[in-house]
Amino acid sequence: MNKHIRVLTLVAAALALVSSVGCSKLRARDQLNKGVTAYKNAKYEEAIDHFQQSVALDPSLINAKMYLATAFAQQYIPGVEDKDNMKMADQAIEQYKKVLDMPAAARDQKVNSAKGIAYLYLNMKKFDDAKKYYRMAADMDPNDPEPYYSVGVIDWTACYQPRMEERAKLGLKPDENLNPKNKDQKKVCAELKVKNGPAITEGIDSLNKAIQLRPDYDDAMAYLNLMYREKADVECDDLALRQEDLKTADHWVDQTLITKKAKAEKQPGTQGITMDQPK
Image 1 (cartoon, rainbow, N blue to C red):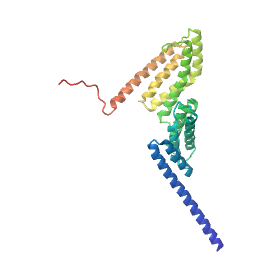
Image 2 (cartoon, one colour):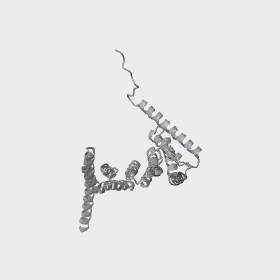
Image 3 (cartoon, rainbow, N blue to C red):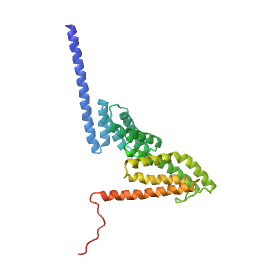
Image 4 (cartoon, helix red, strand yellow):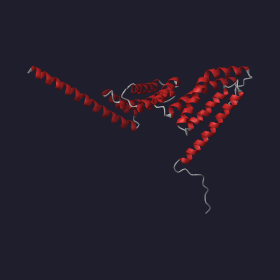
């Protein structure tokens, strides 16, 4: 009899545990739904509170972590280095990373998490970290052109700023190339070529890949033009190659304009210029 009672007690305890777990999951989903409603109404602090409760009630609820990361990211203001603002970015990154670590997360969830982290690092000017996660997104979804484009943009940014700083020190005008006949300019050019060379090569390759995947990617074309101008300005020891780079850059300017025009003509309701008819 005592053995029978013990069995019944264990069964009751197990049922209570299952019931408790099920109840927690239901409450977690309720908090998730409330958070989504608050988020859609731009009540981000309220949304964060609901999403945090949802995650606490059911740590396996991936959507709750995704929404929590997105809500933190929404509160982050790019360019503002205030402690609380940076904390928002860090908290968003933390939640995105948790999704990446979850085996049950779908590929799209992991890709979006990697992109979310990369975007935050980009705005925090942590370029190497940003490229790391854009590359991760590209590895998970090789047919997505956006990570390749983003890596190209980061590479151009990393090249352009130091080059312009060095040009400013030399007193060069924007339309002047570094002159190999000038000793100081030749020295700067050689240093920039070594420093920026890897990023220039990677940027051109990444942007070409983005265009290969999306032939009408006009933004990628525009940056490819800029990247070839970066390459041209450090070709101090080969003026023929510099001219070839500038010619390629001009080609991508033309392609950008052609593509933008073609897109505009395909937009619903797009019409040409019409003249008022005489009455």
